[in-house]
Length: 416
Image (cartoon, rainbow, N blue to C red):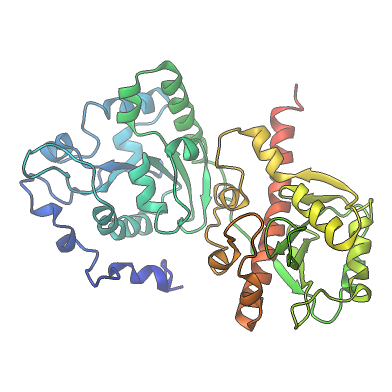
Protein backbone atom coordinates (compact mmCIF):
# COMPACT_ATOMS: atom_id res chain seq x y z
CA UNK A 1 0.00 0.00 0.00
CA UNK A 2 1.07 3.57 -0.68
CA UNK A 3 -1.11 5.57 1.70
CA UNK A 4 -4.72 5.28 0.53
CA UNK A 5 -3.84 3.72 -2.83
CA UNK A 6 -2.03 0.52 -3.74
CA UNK A 7 1.02 0.77 -5.96
CA UNK A 8 -1.00 -0.64 -8.86
CA UNK A 9 -3.68 2.01 -8.45
CA UNK A 10 -1.17 4.85 -8.38
CA UNK A 11 -0.15 3.72 -11.86
CA UNK A 12 -3.61 4.46 -13.24
CA UNK A 13 -2.46 7.92 -14.25
CA UNK A 14 -1.10 6.41 -17.46
CA UNK A 15 -2.67 4.21 -20.10
CA UNK A 16 -0.87 1.37 -21.92
CA UNK A 17 -0.73 3.57 -25.05
CA UNK A 18 1.30 6.14 -23.13
CA UNK A 19 -1.42 8.78 -22.80
CA UNK A 20 -1.94 10.16 -19.31
CA UNK A 21 -5.34 9.95 -17.67
CA UNK A 22 -5.70 13.67 -17.09
CA UNK A 23 -7.92 16.63 -17.96
CA UNK A 24 -5.59 17.43 -20.87
CA UNK A 25 -5.88 13.90 -22.23
CA UNK A 26 -9.68 14.01 -21.84
CA UNK A 27 -10.21 17.47 -23.30
CA UNK A 28 -13.83 17.89 -22.20
CA UNK A 29 -12.94 21.05 -20.27
CA UNK A 30 -11.92 22.75 -23.53
CA UNK A 31 -15.52 22.88 -24.76
CA UNK A 32 -17.84 25.86 -24.61
CA UNK A 33 -18.62 25.37 -20.92
CA UNK A 34 -19.49 27.88 -18.22
CA UNK A 35 -18.28 25.67 -15.38
CA UNK A 36 -15.74 23.06 -16.52
CA UNK A 37 -14.42 20.60 -13.93
CA UNK A 38 -17.48 21.29 -11.79
CA UNK A 39 -16.55 20.79 -8.14
CA UNK A 40 -18.55 18.87 -5.56
CA UNK A 41 -21.21 20.83 -3.72
CA UNK A 42 -23.00 20.32 -0.40
CA UNK A 43 -22.24 20.63 3.32
CA UNK A 44 -21.87 16.88 3.97
CA UNK A 45 -23.37 17.00 7.49
CA UNK A 46 -24.47 13.35 7.43
CA UNK A 47 -21.42 11.98 5.57
CA UNK A 48 -23.36 10.94 2.46
CA UNK A 49 -21.51 11.17 -0.85
CA UNK A 50 -23.81 11.15 -3.88
CA UNK A 51 -22.11 10.28 -7.18
CA UNK A 52 -24.13 10.98 -10.32
CA UNK A 53 -23.21 9.92 -13.83
CA UNK A 54 -22.10 13.13 -15.54
CA UNK A 55 -22.53 16.89 -15.36
CA UNK A 56 -25.62 18.07 -17.26
CA UNK A 57 -26.26 21.25 -19.22
CA UNK A 58 -28.31 22.50 -16.24
CA UNK A 59 -25.45 21.81 -13.83
CA UNK A 60 -22.97 23.58 -16.10
CA UNK A 61 -25.24 26.58 -16.51
CA UNK A 62 -25.88 27.03 -12.77
CA UNK A 63 -22.48 25.92 -11.49
CA UNK A 64 -23.95 23.40 -9.04
CA UNK A 65 -24.42 19.66 -9.03
CA UNK A 66 -27.75 17.86 -9.62
CA UNK A 67 -29.66 20.83 -11.08
CA UNK A 68 -31.50 19.13 -13.96
CA UNK A 69 -35.25 18.59 -13.99
CA UNK A 70 -34.68 14.85 -13.60
CA UNK A 71 -32.57 15.43 -10.49
CA UNK A 72 -35.49 17.21 -8.81
CA UNK A 73 -36.94 13.79 -8.05
CA UNK A 74 -33.83 13.00 -5.99
CA UNK A 75 -34.16 16.14 -3.90
CA UNK A 76 -37.84 15.50 -3.21
CA UNK A 77 -37.32 11.82 -2.38
CA UNK A 78 -34.44 12.59 -0.04
CA UNK A 79 -36.58 15.25 1.65
CA UNK A 80 -39.32 12.68 2.14
CA UNK A 81 -36.75 10.44 3.84
CA UNK A 82 -35.47 13.22 6.11
CA UNK A 83 -32.34 14.08 4.12
CA UNK A 84 -31.48 17.55 2.82
CA UNK A 85 -29.59 17.16 -0.47
CA UNK A 86 -27.40 20.23 0.05
CA UNK A 87 -27.00 20.27 3.83
CA UNK A 88 -26.56 16.57 4.54
CA UNK A 89 -24.76 15.38 1.41
CA UNK A 90 -21.75 16.00 -0.80
CA UNK A 91 -22.80 15.87 -4.45
CA UNK A 92 -20.60 15.23 -7.47
CA UNK A 93 -20.70 13.58 -10.87
CA UNK A 94 -18.42 10.80 -12.09
CA UNK A 95 -17.60 12.96 -15.14
CA UNK A 96 -17.17 16.51 -13.91
CA UNK A 97 -17.47 18.32 -17.25
CA UNK A 98 -20.63 18.45 -19.35
CA UNK A 99 -20.11 15.98 -22.25
CA UNK A 100 -21.72 17.09 -25.49
CA UNK A 101 -21.30 16.66 -29.22
CA UNK A 102 -19.33 19.66 -30.50
CA UNK A 103 -21.01 19.44 -33.91
CA UNK A 104 -24.62 19.19 -32.80
CA UNK A 105 -24.35 20.76 -29.35
CA UNK A 106 -26.43 17.90 -27.93
CA UNK A 107 -25.55 15.97 -24.77
CA UNK A 108 -23.87 12.61 -25.20
CA UNK A 109 -22.75 9.68 -23.04
CA UNK A 110 -19.15 10.09 -21.82
CA UNK A 111 -16.54 7.68 -23.14
CA UNK A 112 -14.71 5.11 -21.04
CA UNK A 113 -11.57 7.24 -21.33
CA UNK A 114 -13.39 10.32 -20.03
CA UNK A 115 -14.67 8.30 -17.07
CA UNK A 116 -11.14 7.08 -16.36
CA UNK A 117 -9.70 10.57 -16.53
CA UNK A 118 -12.09 11.81 -13.83
CA UNK A 119 -11.61 8.70 -11.68
CA UNK A 120 -8.43 9.91 -10.00
CA UNK A 121 -10.24 13.06 -8.90
CA UNK A 122 -13.07 10.90 -7.58
CA UNK A 123 -10.66 8.75 -5.59
CA UNK A 124 -8.99 11.83 -4.14
CA UNK A 125 -12.40 13.23 -3.17
CA UNK A 126 -13.31 10.05 -1.30
CA UNK A 127 -9.93 10.04 0.43
CA UNK A 128 -10.40 13.67 1.50
CA UNK A 129 -13.97 13.46 2.84
CA UNK A 130 -14.09 9.84 4.06
CA UNK A 131 -17.85 9.35 3.57
CA UNK A 132 -19.77 6.78 5.59
CA UNK A 133 -22.14 6.06 2.69
CA UNK A 134 -21.49 6.45 -1.04
CA UNK A 135 -24.71 6.43 -3.07
CA UNK A 136 -23.88 5.52 -6.66
CA UNK A 137 -26.48 6.72 -9.19
CA UNK A 138 -26.37 4.73 -12.41
CA UNK A 139 -23.90 2.59 -14.31
CA UNK A 140 -21.45 5.35 -15.29
CA UNK A 141 -20.99 6.26 -11.63
CA UNK A 142 -20.59 2.58 -10.80
CA UNK A 143 -18.03 2.24 -13.59
CA UNK A 144 -16.13 5.15 -12.11
CA UNK A 145 -15.64 3.80 -8.60
CA UNK A 146 -15.85 0.03 -9.13
CA UNK A 147 -14.98 -0.59 -12.78
CA UNK A 148 -11.20 -0.36 -12.37
CA UNK A 149 -11.32 -3.19 -9.81
CA UNK A 150 -14.17 -5.33 -11.14
CA UNK A 151 -12.88 -6.96 -14.33
CA UNK A 152 -15.68 -9.49 -14.82
CA UNK A 153 -18.12 -7.16 -16.60
CA UNK A 154 -20.42 -5.00 -14.52
CA UNK A 155 -23.64 -6.01 -16.25
CA UNK A 156 -26.79 -3.96 -15.73
CA UNK A 157 -27.74 -1.74 -12.81
CA UNK A 158 -30.60 -4.13 -12.10
CA UNK A 159 -27.94 -6.56 -10.87
CA UNK A 160 -26.25 -3.99 -8.62
CA UNK A 161 -29.06 -1.86 -7.21
CA UNK A 162 -30.17 -2.45 -3.66
CA UNK A 163 -26.91 -3.72 -2.18
CA UNK A 164 -25.15 -2.00 0.71
CA UNK A 165 -21.56 -3.01 0.03
CA UNK A 166 -18.95 -2.72 2.80
CA UNK A 167 -16.25 -1.68 0.33
CA UNK A 168 -12.88 -2.35 1.97
CA UNK A 169 -11.08 -0.14 -0.53
CA UNK A 170 -13.09 2.98 0.35
CA UNK A 171 -13.86 1.96 3.95
CA UNK A 172 -17.46 3.02 3.29
CA UNK A 173 -20.84 1.51 2.47
CA UNK A 174 -21.30 1.68 -1.31
CA UNK A 175 -24.99 1.72 -2.30
CA UNK A 176 -25.74 1.50 -6.04
CA UNK A 177 -29.19 2.78 -7.07
CA UNK A 178 -30.89 3.72 -10.30
CA UNK A 179 -30.06 7.10 -11.82
CA UNK A 180 -32.77 9.76 -11.20
CA UNK A 181 -33.13 10.30 -14.97
CA UNK A 182 -33.89 6.58 -15.41
CA UNK A 183 -36.55 6.74 -12.70
CA UNK A 184 -38.16 9.86 -14.19
CA UNK A 185 -38.16 8.44 -17.73
CA UNK A 186 -39.65 5.11 -16.64
CA UNK A 187 -42.38 6.87 -14.66
CA UNK A 188 -43.58 3.54 -13.30
CA UNK A 189 -44.90 3.09 -9.78
CA UNK A 190 -42.82 -0.09 -9.31
CA UNK A 191 -39.55 1.61 -10.33
CA UNK A 192 -40.29 4.62 -8.13
CA UNK A 193 -41.03 2.34 -5.17
CA UNK A 194 -37.85 0.27 -5.64
CA UNK A 195 -35.77 3.44 -5.98
CA UNK A 196 -37.22 4.97 -2.83
CA UNK A 197 -36.68 1.76 -0.89
CA UNK A 198 -33.06 1.57 -2.07
CA UNK A 199 -32.41 5.16 -0.96
CA UNK A 200 -34.11 4.50 2.37
CA UNK A 201 -31.85 1.49 2.94
CA UNK A 202 -28.74 3.51 2.01
CA UNK A 203 -29.62 6.14 4.64
CA UNK A 204 -29.94 3.45 7.34
CA UNK A 205 -26.28 2.55 6.82
CA UNK A 206 -25.10 5.98 8.00
CA UNK A 207 -25.52 4.72 11.56
CA UNK A 208 -24.46 1.09 10.99
CA UNK A 209 -20.92 0.08 12.02
CA UNK A 210 -18.74 -0.58 9.00
CA UNK A 211 -18.23 -4.31 8.37
CA UNK A 212 -14.45 -4.53 8.35
CA UNK A 213 -13.04 -7.63 6.70
CA UNK A 214 -10.67 -9.49 9.02
CA UNK A 215 -8.11 -11.58 7.19
CA UNK A 216 -8.22 -15.24 8.22
CA UNK A 217 -5.31 -17.23 9.59
CA UNK A 218 -4.33 -19.71 6.89
CA UNK A 219 -2.67 -22.97 7.95
CA UNK A 220 -1.01 -24.75 5.04
CA UNK A 221 -0.70 -28.48 5.73
CA UNK A 222 2.53 -29.56 4.06
CA UNK A 223 3.71 -32.95 5.31
CA UNK A 224 0.47 -34.64 6.37
CA UNK A 225 -3.20 -34.00 7.07
CA UNK A 226 -3.24 -35.21 10.69
CA UNK A 227 -4.19 -31.74 11.97
CA UNK A 228 -7.61 -32.23 10.38
CA UNK A 229 -8.29 -34.68 13.20
CA UNK A 230 -8.40 -31.70 15.59
CA UNK A 231 -11.70 -30.59 14.02
CA UNK A 232 -14.27 -31.54 16.63
CA UNK A 233 -17.80 -32.81 16.24
CA UNK A 234 -20.45 -30.07 15.91
CA UNK A 235 -17.83 -27.65 14.53
CA UNK A 236 -19.39 -26.04 11.49
CA UNK A 237 -16.98 -26.07 8.54
CA UNK A 238 -16.98 -24.92 4.96
CA UNK A 239 -14.85 -26.76 2.45
CA UNK A 240 -13.91 -26.07 -1.14
CA UNK A 241 -12.03 -27.81 -3.95
CA UNK A 242 -9.90 -26.33 -6.71
CA UNK A 243 -9.98 -28.64 -9.70
CA UNK A 244 -8.71 -28.94 -13.25
CA UNK A 245 -12.21 -28.48 -14.68
CA UNK A 246 -15.92 -28.75 -14.02
CA UNK A 247 -16.79 -32.41 -14.58
CA UNK A 248 -14.95 -35.01 -12.47
CA UNK A 249 -15.66 -37.91 -14.83
CA UNK A 250 -14.03 -36.25 -17.86
CA UNK A 251 -10.64 -37.61 -18.91
CA UNK A 252 -7.64 -36.32 -16.96
CA UNK A 253 -9.61 -34.30 -14.41
CA UNK A 254 -8.08 -33.95 -10.93
CA UNK A 255 -8.68 -32.23 -7.60
CA UNK A 256 -5.71 -29.94 -7.08
CA UNK A 257 -6.24 -28.78 -3.51
CA UNK A 258 -8.82 -28.37 -0.77
CA UNK A 259 -9.50 -25.89 2.00
CA UNK A 260 -11.50 -26.34 5.20
CA UNK A 261 -12.59 -23.29 7.20
CA UNK A 262 -13.18 -24.58 10.74
CA UNK A 263 -14.05 -21.11 12.06
CA UNK A 264 -14.65 -17.64 10.68
CA UNK A 265 -11.05 -16.78 11.56
CA UNK A 266 -9.12 -19.90 10.55
CA UNK A 267 -8.80 -22.14 7.52
CA UNK A 268 -6.75 -25.24 6.66
CA UNK A 269 -5.57 -25.63 3.08
CA UNK A 270 -3.61 -28.46 1.49
CA UNK A 271 -2.59 -29.95 -1.84
CA UNK A 272 -4.29 -33.16 -2.99
CA UNK A 273 -1.61 -33.70 -5.64
CA UNK A 274 2.03 -34.57 -5.04
CA UNK A 275 5.04 -32.94 -6.68
CA UNK A 276 4.54 -35.09 -9.78
CA UNK A 277 0.98 -33.70 -10.02
CA UNK A 278 -0.52 -37.10 -9.20
CA UNK A 279 -3.09 -37.77 -6.43
CA UNK A 280 -1.58 -38.17 -2.95
CA UNK A 281 -1.55 -41.61 -1.35
CA UNK A 282 -4.62 -43.12 0.31
CA UNK A 283 -2.70 -43.30 3.59
CA UNK A 284 -2.00 -39.58 3.58
CA UNK A 285 -5.60 -38.91 2.53
CA UNK A 286 -7.16 -40.83 5.46
CA UNK A 287 -7.69 -37.87 7.89
CA UNK A 288 -9.45 -35.94 5.14
CA UNK A 289 -11.72 -38.85 4.23
CA UNK A 290 -12.66 -39.24 7.90
CA UNK A 291 -13.64 -35.56 7.89
CA UNK A 292 -15.77 -36.05 4.78
CA UNK A 293 -17.79 -38.99 6.14
CA UNK A 294 -18.20 -37.65 9.70
CA UNK A 295 -21.90 -36.79 9.87
CA UNK A 296 -21.40 -34.94 13.17
CA UNK A 297 -19.34 -32.21 11.51
CA UNK A 298 -21.85 -29.82 9.85
CA UNK A 299 -20.62 -28.87 6.38
CA UNK A 300 -21.14 -25.81 4.17
CA UNK A 301 -20.30 -25.28 0.50
CA UNK A 302 -21.01 -22.94 -2.39
CA UNK A 303 -23.04 -25.20 -4.70
CA UNK A 304 -22.55 -28.41 -2.68
CA UNK A 305 -23.38 -30.58 -5.70
CA UNK A 306 -19.94 -29.72 -7.12
CA UNK A 307 -18.02 -30.88 -4.02
CA UNK A 308 -20.33 -33.90 -3.62
CA UNK A 309 -19.78 -35.13 -7.19
CA UNK A 310 -16.03 -34.64 -7.09
CA UNK A 311 -15.76 -36.35 -3.69
CA UNK A 312 -17.62 -39.47 -4.79
CA UNK A 313 -15.88 -39.67 -8.17
CA UNK A 314 -12.33 -39.29 -6.83
CA UNK A 315 -12.53 -40.72 -3.29
CA UNK A 316 -15.45 -43.15 -3.54
CA UNK A 317 -17.37 -41.75 -0.56
CA UNK A 318 -20.38 -39.46 -0.11
CA UNK A 319 -20.05 -36.33 1.99
CA UNK A 320 -22.04 -36.59 5.20
CA UNK A 321 -23.28 -33.72 7.35
CA UNK A 322 -24.35 -31.21 4.69
CA UNK A 323 -26.26 -28.33 6.31
CA UNK A 324 -25.96 -25.24 4.08
CA UNK A 325 -25.47 -24.35 0.40
CA UNK A 326 -24.61 -20.65 0.08
CA UNK A 327 -25.47 -20.50 -3.63
CA UNK A 328 -28.90 -21.98 -3.01
CA UNK A 329 -29.60 -19.60 -0.12
CA UNK A 330 -28.50 -16.60 -2.19
CA UNK A 331 -31.03 -17.53 -4.85
CA UNK A 332 -33.79 -17.99 -2.26
CA UNK A 333 -33.20 -14.50 -0.82
CA UNK A 334 -32.82 -12.77 -4.20
CA UNK A 335 -33.66 -14.43 -7.52
CA UNK A 336 -31.97 -11.85 -9.74
CA UNK A 337 -29.65 -13.37 -12.33
CA UNK A 338 -25.85 -13.12 -12.15
CA UNK A 339 -25.65 -12.54 -8.39
CA UNK A 340 -25.17 -16.06 -7.00
CA UNK A 341 -21.46 -16.50 -7.77
CA UNK A 342 -19.16 -16.49 -4.75
CA UNK A 343 -17.04 -13.73 -6.31
CA UNK A 344 -20.04 -11.39 -6.61
CA UNK A 345 -21.26 -12.25 -3.11
CA UNK A 346 -17.74 -11.75 -1.72
CA UNK A 347 -17.85 -8.18 -2.96
CA UNK A 348 -21.43 -7.16 -2.15
CA UNK A 349 -21.41 -8.83 1.29
CA UNK A 350 -17.80 -8.34 2.41
CA UNK A 351 -16.40 -5.68 0.09
CA UNK A 352 -13.67 -8.04 -1.16
CA UNK A 353 -12.96 -7.96 -4.89
CA UNK A 354 -10.36 -9.49 -7.20
CA UNK A 355 -9.10 -12.09 -4.70
CA UNK A 356 -9.10 -14.47 -7.69
CA UNK A 357 -6.92 -12.15 -9.77
CA UNK A 358 -3.84 -14.41 -9.73
CA UNK A 359 -5.70 -17.55 -10.81
CA UNK A 360 -8.40 -16.11 -13.10
CA UNK A 361 -6.49 -16.68 -16.34
CA UNK A 362 -5.67 -20.30 -15.44
CA UNK A 363 -8.90 -21.55 -13.90
CA UNK A 364 -11.07 -21.09 -16.99
CA UNK A 365 -11.54 -24.00 -19.41
CA UNK A 366 -12.75 -23.94 -23.02
CA UNK A 367 -15.85 -25.96 -22.12
CA UNK A 368 -17.27 -28.07 -19.31
CA UNK A 369 -15.29 -31.18 -20.35
CA UNK A 370 -11.94 -29.49 -20.99
CA UNK A 371 -8.95 -29.15 -18.71
CA UNK A 372 -7.99 -25.71 -17.50
CA UNK A 373 -4.40 -24.51 -17.02
CA UNK A 374 -4.20 -24.90 -13.26
CA UNK A 375 -1.83 -27.90 -13.31
CA UNK A 376 0.77 -25.84 -15.15
CA UNK A 377 0.12 -22.92 -12.78
CA UNK A 378 0.59 -24.88 -9.53
CA UNK A 379 3.74 -26.58 -10.82
CA UNK A 380 5.57 -23.36 -9.86
CA UNK A 381 6.04 -22.23 -6.25
CA UNK A 382 4.35 -18.90 -6.92
CA UNK A 383 1.39 -20.56 -8.63
CA UNK A 384 1.00 -23.16 -5.90
CA UNK A 385 0.97 -20.53 -3.15
CA UNK A 386 -1.49 -18.36 -5.10
CA UNK A 387 -3.82 -21.30 -5.67
CA UNK A 388 -3.74 -22.33 -2.00
CA UNK A 389 -4.51 -18.79 -0.85
CA UNK A 390 -7.35 -18.49 -3.36
CA UNK A 391 -8.81 -21.80 -2.24
CA UNK A 392 -8.50 -20.78 1.43
CA UNK A 393 -10.41 -17.56 0.77
CA UNK A 394 -13.17 -19.47 -1.01
CA UNK A 395 -14.00 -21.60 2.02
CA UNK A 396 -13.62 -18.82 4.60
CA UNK A 397 -15.95 -16.61 2.57
CA UNK A 398 -18.44 -19.47 2.21
CA UNK A 399 -18.56 -19.99 5.97
CA UNK A 400 -18.92 -16.28 6.73
CA UNK A 401 -21.58 -15.94 4.03
CA UNK A 402 -23.52 -18.88 5.46
CA UNK A 403 -23.57 -17.20 8.88
CA UNK A 404 -24.80 -13.88 7.42
CA UNK A 405 -27.49 -15.70 5.46
CA UNK A 406 -28.76 -17.50 8.54
CA UNK A 407 -28.76 -14.25 10.51
CA UNK A 408 -30.83 -12.67 7.74
CA UNK A 409 -33.20 -15.64 7.75
CA UNK A 410 -33.67 -15.31 11.50
CA UNK A 411 -34.32 -11.60 11.15
CA UNK A 412 -36.93 -11.71 8.37
CA UNK A 413 -38.59 -15.10 8.81
CA UNK A 414 -38.46 -16.38 12.37
CA UNK A 415 -40.31 -13.40 13.98
CA UNK A 416 -43.41 -14.50 12.07
